[in-house]
Image (tube, rainbow, N blue to C red):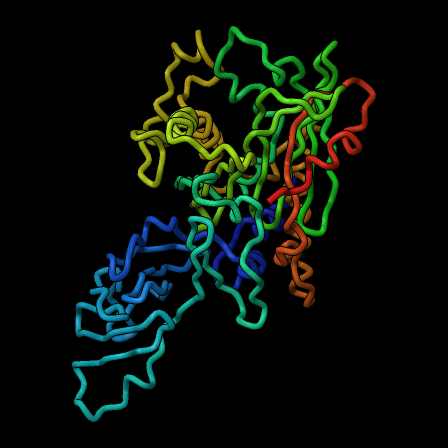
Length: 422
């Protein structure tokens, strides 16, 4: 458990907070590329780390990320006209470029130079891997763009979606890196015993790295051996996990890694989170089929009527829990794997009181995450930069899972598979 003071430190992310300063040292997802589909398209509201912003793509395709509010009379630039390489406020016509420079102030006399004294807060924004990334930190500390393997893949081999969660970012991260819960929360066929139901108390092994940590859940699956699932956590909110399909690691060890998946839990403010969900086809000869993506999104609960930024299952309607389904078919009565995650995390409240928890041996990854984030906040106050901002530290990492014979060390058996190919 955490003290009340450490819980505050972990969860408060707004301007001027210690954790907010840590998070501002990293590039973070702000939008999907399709949210700004073309030059001079409508602007979009964005909320990051408690800051209300507006994004737009100008006539030349450049992306601007500005303070949402016009510095004249503070109306929203979301209402603005996106025209001729600038966003023009509809109230009095002030116009700003992607760097926050005031280009025009038509309600002032022609000889006025007042516009030259006005600069609107702007942040760097870059398009990469289907995502528009934003950097909100000090200019002299700006790192290179993220170096995840899936971002380097062609568009045909990756897919990204976005979901809104009504809870603090740390609840999302902790839910994602908790491997034990999949034996229960995501047991969607009570009549079937999968690998994660054969051993519901995995041995958690956590290892710090220069970018965050990696952790393995080792499950005893009887005569088949040990089912080992190795995850990667890259600071401050990236999780990588593998997805299994039959294959062979060598003549003795079976493994399954056709796709790599993950989430990024991006804090909008202290009490809400944008979740970016991605999947990447590792085999260069096999792109992601549309049917596969549609099936995956539906299974997650993010199908055409599922949980995107428009939520259909929320605390207000009890996530549409079906008690008959819970009794006869799945463990939760909630439809959709990721909707199940949202339900249990949001049911904790917007910010969970961690001082009331009682953690166990299967919570080692959660404990490591908290310690790492808290240490990063304390270090930064002493001038020590946080880990994982430099993409060189995680450029070549992968997750994986394997069924290995009893007694085989997963470090030795999976070493090559934990390295990126692309």
